[in-house]
Amino acid sequence: MRDPYLYPDSDVLKNLAGIQDSEELKNMEADYTVLRLSEIAEDESPTQFDFQTLCGLHYRIFQDVYEWAGKPRVINIEKAEAVLGEISIIYSDCFDIVKDAESILKRANGFEWKQASFEDVVITFSNFMAELWKVHPFREGNTRTVVTFCCMFIEAQGIYIESDLFKDNAAYMRNALVAANAVFDDLGDLRKPEYLYRIVQDALERGQEMKDQVVEAIRKSDVSDTEERIRQVILWNRKEKREHLPEEIREMVSSPEK
Image (cartoon, rainbow, N blue to C red):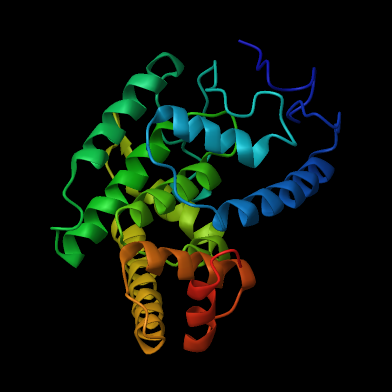
């Protein structure tokens, strides 16, 4: 079947700018997605984490680039992976995308994150991210969307994560997701999830350190360190790309319109 997402006789994805050069499209996509992801980083987390929310996030990230942003792919795909000797991960059949994703999301939403040990959170969260990524719901942009979605999800549980670690090590992160999903009918189970566990553990440890620093600053400001207040200050720090002092937090609380 001809790939309907590509321009005729080309390997370039159809896009809103009509660009038919792969390098030019790559650069345009990067410019727009960096902008959208920076906006998302300053937002409150969604109240629901379902497939509709995942699609909405994909739309928000790629709305400037692709007409089909936010829509599940309608074809099956393969992607040769250098770390697997050019073998592709077996992604969800396009007819099973919604079912597979909803099953994974149901389990994640039902897990008792706050009651789990740190080690269990690392493993369960890593597996959740890897399984959702393996669905590959969209024709393009799956890694950025799934990683962003999962980071928003875990922070909604009150567990903070240094998501910039994934962005700054994008190639490693994608290879780690590939390694965590290397299961094949003919070759057997070749999974190596330890690479993903390692970077997720590091990101969660940094997230906890960030939260601890914010809690300390809030307490020094003589303001109650509620979960809502912690979240408010963390988002404020991210927006202005710096840590705010206790006196600034005290002023912010006394002048909420700020």
